[in-house]
Amino acid sequence: MTLPEPIRPTRRHVLDLDDFTRHEIETLLDTAVGMKEILSREIAQVPTLRGVSVVNMFYEDSTRTRISFELAAKALSANVVNFAARGSSVEKGESLLDTMRTLQALGADILVLRHSYAGTAHLLAQHFRGAIINAGDGSHAHPTQALLDLFTLRDKLGTLERRHIVIVGDILHSRVARSNLWGLTAMGAHVTLCAPPTLLGNEQFWLDTWPDLRIVYSLDAALQDADAVIVLRLQRERQEAGLLPSLREYAQFFALSQARLQAALTGMLVLHPGPLNEGVEIAPDVAVSAQSVIEEQVTNGVAVRMALLYHLALHLRQKGA
Ligand code: NCD
Image (cartoon, rainbow, N blue to C red; front, side, top):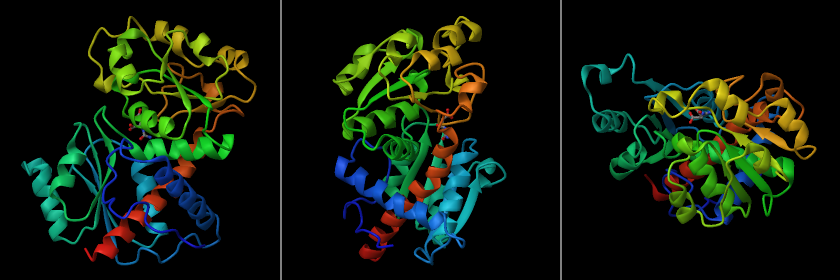
C-alpha cells in the first residue's frame, strides 16, 4: 500500500470537521480504504507508527470509540495507553491541564480526548505540544464519528454528491449531528434534519450555520427520497426534564420503525452511531435489517481512525516534534 502525504501540512489536531475541506476529507477516506485492506490481512498489523505514543483520555463512558482507537493504534504498532479518569489522580483533584502536562512529560505524542464539556479538546490543543483528537466533547463535536459515517456512506452510495441524507432525533444534544453537518455539506450531500421542536432548539441557528439545510418535523415526510437516514440516540444524560412528553410518544412519531422503513425508498441505508436505545429511536428489527449498516460503521471506524492517526503522526514526525 502506498500511503499518501499528510492531509494538510499544517494540520496538527482534529477538533471538529468545520475546518476540513472536501479534498482533505477525501484524502482521509482514501487512506482509510488502504487501512481497511490492512485490517483484512491475516496479520492485521503494520509497523508504520512504531515509537509513537497514543493516550486515550476518556472522561466519559465509551465502548466503541475507545476500543476502536485502541485497535487502530495497535494495528499501526503505536504504543497505546488507556487513561480512564476513574481510578486516576483526577479523583484526587488533578485538573485536565495538569493531567495533560503529566502525559506530555511521559512522552505522549497523540492524545485522544473524550469529555462531557464542550471545548475541552480545543483547550488541550492550545497547550499540548503533540496532536489532539477530539473523541467527543459534550454536545459539541465528534469528528471521528462523522468521518466514519462519511466513509460508510461513500462506500455504499458511491458518492455523497447530491445524495439525500436525513438526520433524525435528539439533534439539540448531538455532537454526532453537528460534526456530520460539516462533513456531509463539505462532501456535497443534501441534508434534512428531523426532530421534535424541543429537541431541535433554535431553528434559525441551524439555518444560519448551514443555509442549504432542510428542517422537517414529520419523519414520514423527511424520509421521502432519502438515500440514508442517520438515527441519533436520545441523549437522556444531557437532557433537561420536560423536553419530551413520554418515550412512547417520541417513539410513535420519531422512531425508525419497520413500517417507516417499508414506506421509504428501497435500499435506504440505516445508520446509528450507537449505543442504541432499541424500541425508542429505532425498532430492534430495523437495527439488524438488511438495510442497516450499523455494524459496518463500527468496523469502518477502526480504519478511519488508523488513517487519522497516520496522517497526524506523519505531520508530527515531519516537524520533528
Ligand atoms: C456517540 C457519542 O458518544 O457521541 N457514540 C459513539 O461515539 N459511538 C453517540 C451517542 O452516544 O449517542
